[in-house]
View 1 (cartoon, rainbow, N blue to C red):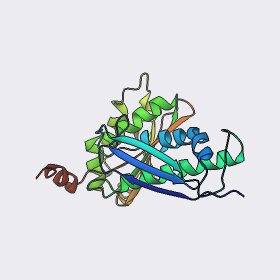
View 2 (cartoon, rainbow, N blue to C red):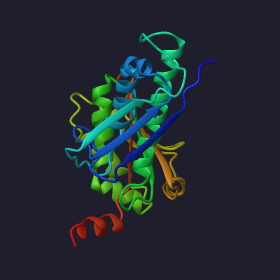
View 3 (cartoon, helix red, strand yellow):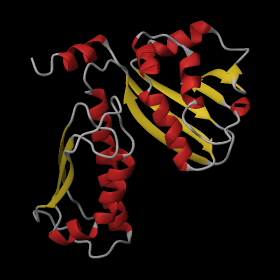
View 4 (cartoon, rainbow, N blue to C red):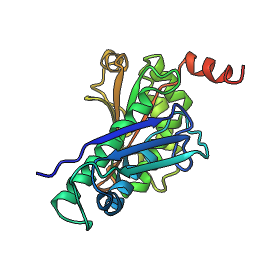
Length: 239
């Protein structure tokens, strides 16, 4: 077994939506310089999937965006090609660390009280799944409803509807809050009980799952709620 020890640090609290994120991530590996150079594909994969394209606080972006990986040479790990078991292990490690740090950013968002996983399944392609996931994640009405622990299903369904996906048949759409099936075939699930939705919304971590019944594509976005503290922090930012 070849071993490489990683150290990582990330700095961000808002302005972390894709495109230009106000985010600095530094990842160090104990491998040799060869390991650093040859794992660029793994870095790209981990960054794109776990950080740059899968988190948002409020939809705002910035121009300060960097992901740095450094091989210190302190260890014995040498990878000279982008294939093989060692390369795959390194790529997986970088991806796992990136995902963990991305989620920590959301948990530490300004005024955040809840961590929300938005997953859109059964889409025609990943692009439309991501479009819907971000429409939900960016909606102030959705985010404030989560802060209030209010299972306001209409706000989530409305975000799906205005996401801009062509030819979306909302009569086939299903919506879940964790394991609770709240919307069926585009409308309220006849078996859904408000107390079940309330139970889920009171949790500090919640998964929203939308099924489009259009294909096999899927995408996940991590976000948080919008609280009174979020407003206070940003209103007093320059005072």
